[in-house]
Amino acid sequence: MPRSLLGLPKAHLHVHLEGTIRPATLVDIAARHGVAAPLGAQDGARYAFRDLASFFVDYQRVRDCLNDADDFRRIAYELCQDEAAQGVRYAEVTFSPAYHALRLGDWDMPVATILEGFAQGESDFGIKCRLILDHSRRRSYELAEQTLAAAVRFRDRGVIGLGLGGPEADYPPEPFAPLLDDATLAQIARASVGSSYLDNSAKQSIAGEIDEWLAAEGEGFEPSRGFDSPNPLSRRAH
Ligand SMILES: [Zn+2]
Image (cartoon, rainbow, N blue to C red; front, side):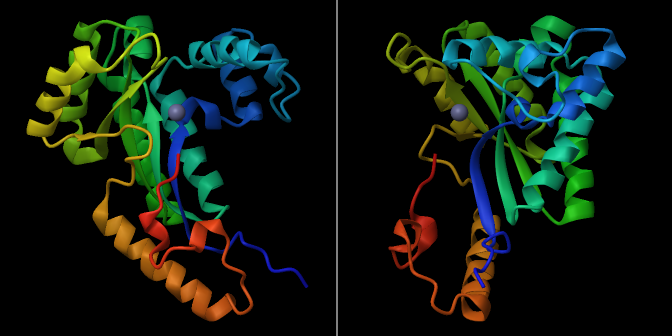
């Protein structure tokens, strides 16, 4: 009988919060606010996209459905439930607060309520989720500073990193070098792709759980490329 890898303890190191919303939840939230859910989610069963461009259009429309504390708290909590069901013990979740701050006139409500959802999810499902606040390099330095300020305000409640997203070729990172120095001084990690996995205690704990799983259920388990180093966690995922 094939063994399921669902039970294998995992760390999810790069996931965008609004990309994890259950279609049925999105339809529900949109209806509550009297707005139309993106076309790709309207059957409530799964998302569908024609191409990358339509994906980005829909992704923005997904974000536009989120309006109040219940919305953000709910999607964070459901992320915990869905990730835990896949064996994930620790996740680093990316979220861009500036987009919602400009829409809603509030930097803190979305971040605060997402962290509340994570806390409830940790209590109910045993998964630890930490938040990376992302700044799109297409946007202004001032918004980047405000993103860092938000990260510092929530540093002790679950925000661990500052990300610099967006198109790399057209928007090189150099202009943001002073900001990244400020982040380091404020004990906010730089969370670029490939340098994730920021919580050392979670790392140690999951390494132990993976060893236990392999000892108990890994007989005959063929090491894949993810396990070809003595310490599987030395590999970086993105
Ligand atoms: Zn990403």
